[in-house]
Amino acid sequence: MWKLIFKNLYSRRRRMAWLIAEMAIVTIVIWVFIDPIIVNGYVDSLPLGYDRDRLCLVKTRRVKENSPGYNAERTDSASSETDLRNLIRRVTNMPEVESATIVDWSYPDAMGYSSISVGKDSVWLSLQVLPMVSGMDYLTTFGIDAIDGSPVAGQLQNLRPETGDIIITRSVANLLFPESNAVGRYIGDDAEDFTPEDAYRIAGVVKDVRPQSVSSCPLVAFRPYEFNPDLDYSIVVRLRSASGKRRFIHDFKERMSTEMRSGNYMCYDINSYDNISEEAAYSAGVTNDLRLRSMLLLFFFTNLLLGVAGVFYLQTRKRSEEAGIMRSFGATPRRIRLMLLGEGWVLATAGCLIGCLVYLQYAVKEGLARAHSNTGYELYDSSWGSDLSVHFIVVSLVVYLLMLIVTGIGISIPAWRISRVNPVDALRHD
Image (cartoon, rainbow, N blue to C red; front, side, top):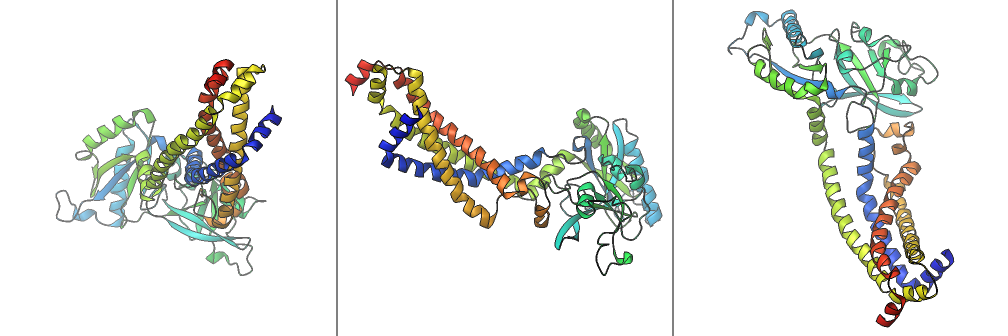
């Protein structure tokens, strides 16, 4: 059969050349839109490193001077910390709550963050630094566990802040100290001008955490510090069950104005952490970009489906006489359909291969969609998203599958009809 397929294609080579060129263009268009969609789907499938489903974020504020309820005697640092701890205790004592902690302006999926640079084989990598108030059950509330060989999470979150002490994720530890335990080591201790006084000391190592749900990069450092009364804190609440989150938020809002206050601190808003992550993705522009690409992909794919499938439909219907002749020589309807589908498969393969090779030239120069913004980490990232060859093959296979679907739809319907036509009727009609 394959000999007959290639013979038929060769006899129509001029007509088929235009069809292959059209399919190559279609392949390039699909590549442009589907690559970031696939990468984003891959990022969404990765574990966050903490249990977001059971978390809520409660925003607090201090009562302003001359406002009702303001207590001028509780504005010092010790009173402010005591009042905030009492407020956390009041929230934690709710029956639905398992634990609670406080965060300031930087936390997982927050709008703002800070970073530090570390060197690895002459490449500078950026570690996102998340501040952690010591003694506030930060790690256990987020559900972040320590790895073997490190102090447990309960000990790490109660560390007395010392100058330069940080807690890093497993990926950072494996990257900087692949052959040894990182606990107690100093970042950059292999440099010639290293001095402990100016370096970060690793107090512990925790499992990988992705600080942004839109990024796959787990290069994170937690830095403990003492309570600062000048900062505005929010309370992160871990619920005992994710199923009662809506009810808890509803009940909490009703109790905020009367019960959820201590000294000059009061709660004024609550939101689920799922919504926090959605807002972060929206603010980063990821949501709008994906929506736009998805709509354009759907639009172009629909038009391409109609266009390419329509061409195959017309090309196949014109071959009723050929099908009738084959039927008269004993060919079965199934064999005719397989021959027509085989021709379509060859054309789709050739067009998709040419289109992918053309797009590869752009990819080598400009790169493909990225799973994170840390360019230096791509040299050490073992995932397929940072490997150009594997990334290109994965997306190309998806594009190829879509092309086969379009081609199959365009050929199957007319092929079914002409393969079952009576040979005499087909020959008389033509």
